[in-house]
Image 1 (tube, rainbow, N blue to C red):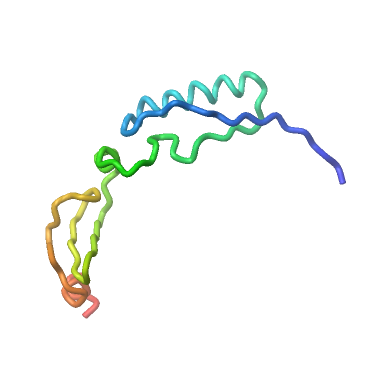
Image 2: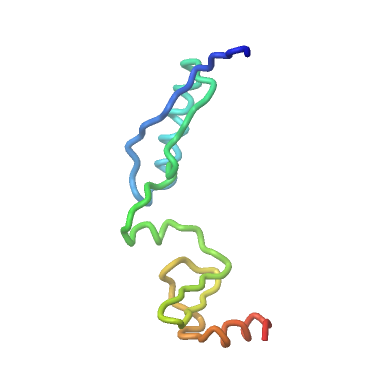
Length: 105
């Protein structure tokens, strides 16, 4: 078996919740430094664009989804081109209402 050595860099960054453009700039800057130092493989944090947390600040940073379905206690709220926590277009739907809305019934 032949062994090949690779120079690897693992980036540890101080990132801020919701500051996606700034965080991406920091990642790119550190990535460039690692590559110039000879790294062939560079690992970034899993949530490098914005750290994950349980704060409401993250919701505003998320890209809108075509369909947002929020369920609780057997009822559903439906929103379109929205983010988690957006006001629903059709609130308090039953499963049957939801299926009918999408033409499944």
